[in-house]
Image (cartoon, rainbow, N blue to C red; front, side):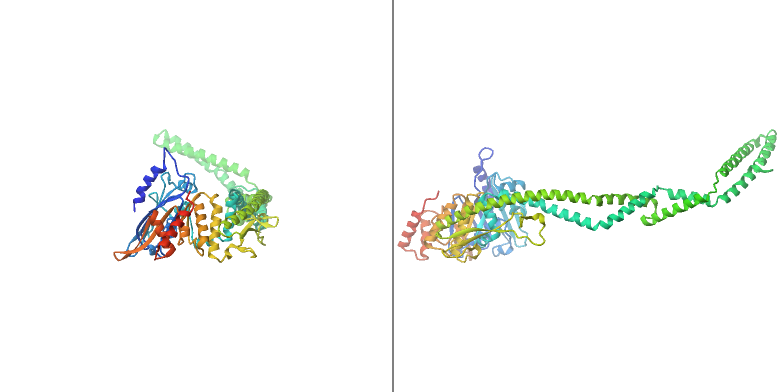
Length: 596
């Protein structure tokens, strides 16, 4: 299974000339499958143009499609592994233009597609599946992002998806070249939504915070008007204590002054007398000089103490009015402390926080006005883009209807009427006014909702595509839509399954011609049971199922020349191939238009 890995380098040499010379088409070059369903080991090389895959029912054609679907990021399951095997392995090699969407996505993810894109998937029975892109381990999301630009598989389910009205707006924009304008509408719409949410939040806050604003204004005003400062309560408490006990302070300090200095036999006087006596003794014994000096110092200290107390007495205040003022102020401070945190520091901090919050609340009306102004501008721009987009879509719809009718005519549905129906995006009771334009709702895709209507037969009313019951009509409508996209899409690989459902004969030949025409723009791979379609293939592969070694195995072979005519004859006549069948198969093959 590493064969494609080796071929990647070889393909790179073919794809690269000088520094970079890449193919202009996205193309599936190689597909290798091992131990997948009833396929044990199979590899096939594809070329450009129309490739047809034929074979008996149950030979494994749908298995091949399932394998491609997994390569494109489909969900893997252990049930897909061939019986008695532990794992299945799938590999695909694509040519990818340097400027293609797939290349840009891959480059953004760090992959270099200069030499092609090699996707490898390993499915384990234990559920530990792995994905490799150009030899590097990758995630399913990474693969899906890249593969979304590589190929499309149009089987029965894909037909139903293409016929859903949700897809029609995308198809119309693609055909009309309005995809970029639609993206501008989407970008503008994405600007409107957050502004709407922001405005609603601001108005909600304004409504909720009306009472809060009043409270904050009162609290800020109350704290500011108090003009308090840190430590004021402690300072006032000390002053209150002095005023309350002024009389006691005055009496006691006065007595102390008298005892120290003011009465006969006061402490200072006695200390001076003792010092004098000791000074006399120092003449006899110098050992007393140290004690004497200390006593002299103590006498001086006591004089200073007495002087200080005397000064204190001069400052003792007897002021009942001041005491009342202090009591009132302390009461105010205590009340503030109880309300705002227990300390003046908490009151001051709360005041700052309340002021900041009040500033935010107060600024809400201004922010609301600013947001409304911005929203009005974006709404106006969104409306302008939506009108422009809708006008261009309606013009493109006329050309699209003409194009599809012309394509259906070439597929045997000449009397078919096809129209693009426009409806307005509805406006509900909860729709924000900024998402309304002249009574119409605005979405990320604009103001339009479109649906393709068709009347396959004369006299029938136009009906939605999803109501088409005929498998043959359904196949041809899908082909017409694919043809419509062929010259508009980035070139990719188109894989058709069941495109021949419900048709045959001359109609099948028309479908074959249309597939061959599509192959001028795309690499087209078609699984078919009809020789009228198979004969138009530039490349023809036959898928066979057989038994070898007691195991069912599927093989695929490229048919050329007589082998191809033999396969067309088998498809025409079944198991018994006659000479006439061979002649008819040869005539069918030779009369087809040569592939371009």
